[in-house]
Amino acid sequence: MHDDSEVAVLRLGHRPGRDERMTTHVGLTARALGADRVLLPDNAGQSKETVADITDRFGGPFGVELTDSPQGVIRNWEGRVVHLTMYGERVQDVEDEIRAAHGDEGRPLLIVVGAEKVPFDVYEEADWNVGVTNQPHSEVAGLAVFLDRLFEGRELERDWENADRHVMPMETGKRVESTDEE
Ligand code: SAM
Image (cartoon, rainbow, N blue to C red):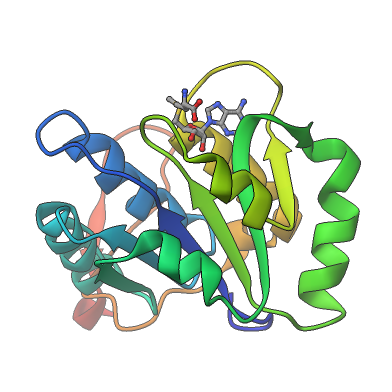
């Protein structure tokens, strides 16, 4: 978020067709829960368009980019790398250390999530392999819980810039207001 050093999310792997919604949801979840940008594999152009379109309508700032070398992004990252995996250390055991490295040391953080089998190099290159439970589930769920732990809930309070609409929270019903009506 704005008051911290950068947090980027890298989606590793994308099977066209099968992973379309999941890759899009990695991007939308990264945006909604406080990351600054998402990097998607270059065969995920449709997911990139969807995330960019949501950002145009509901606000940002949030960046979405394609990369032809996701593992190159990890190797060249000038900061710390967290790889989310069910085999990793328990998030509740390492979150303070990660938050300190990101917040106090001001180091940009790259959060890596996989799709299919993740190459072992990634486990070795990551500064932390982190499990959100050590049970198999979803990259979207793992990312959401991890970001909320990283930001300690502050991401829920953020303001959105350059939105052309916003949702009015309601007990019942649905109301979306255009920002130029205010
Ligand atoms: N079986 C694959 C492997 O061995 O690398 C992982 C497949 S899983 C459906 C896809 C992604 O979800 C993983 O790469 C990981 O990023 C994320 N994931 C699944 N369970 C997780 C957990 N318990 N904690 C953190 N991330 C998890």
